[in-house]
Length: 189
Image 1 (cartoon, rainbow, N blue to C red):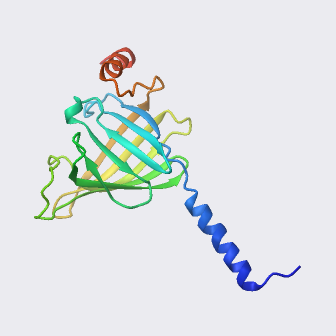
Image 2 (tube, one colour):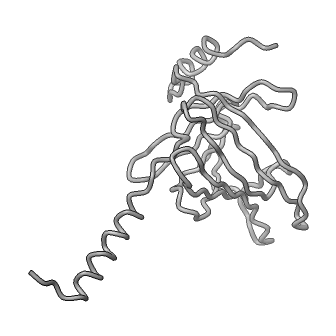
């Protein structure tokens, strides 16, 4: 049986679009405790799969609830605003793109629009771009971001390393979460 040439091109195009839309799973899904180093902040980050390609990134979940931030996003290269605990968009946005089963590129960008009226992140939130890599065993995550100042000049590379928390402490119940954190935290050096 012969198919018209246009039909073959249409089918090939649909299959290509389907494979692009069948986006790979973000390798960071799960809970990550920042490794203790001289420069670490002791962050506890959670990447929660919300379904349909949406992810909620709970940033610094170890802070008091009123000081936590989160980001609802798709890892599609578009920028999404970081929100504060009152669900208000801040002046900082992030984007990511999944490269492969272990690698994600990340960009962060501050909104410098003078008319922006929302909450502003502190000066430590710099523009930058870099790569996040999950180890082949899935238990370690390293992020390296080349940071830039407001003038666009490179300021250096921020590197953070995390270990997956297999205990999964994340809970909407604050007491349950804190008890798990105390129980599973490695001792300070």
